[in-house]
Length: 96
Image 1: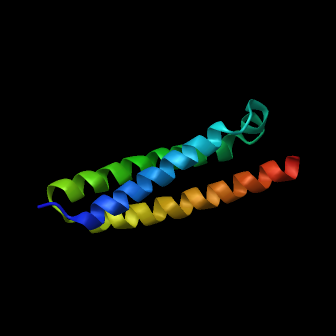
Image 2: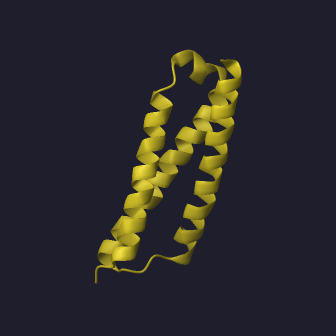
Image 3: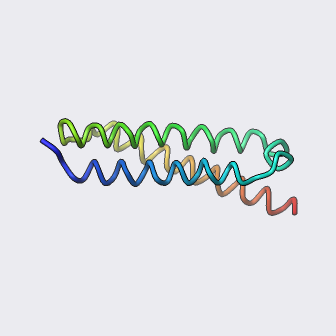
């Protein structure tokens, strides 16, 4: 049975993750090199979010029930990615 909620949640997280990955590519090489650790944390966090969003889409399309661990993982990864994005933007703005 197909459930619309995990599909929409998963598609939203996939869209946010792709937007985050596109944001990182918008920084020039010097900015990424100066703040390498934050850029890596943000990039890897977006990749994990992309995978979890894909899992949510797959779960919504097959069984219709998103496991509790996936909801918790999406929440934790989202908070981590938002924190890394905030720190990265703040560090890059301080350099300019």
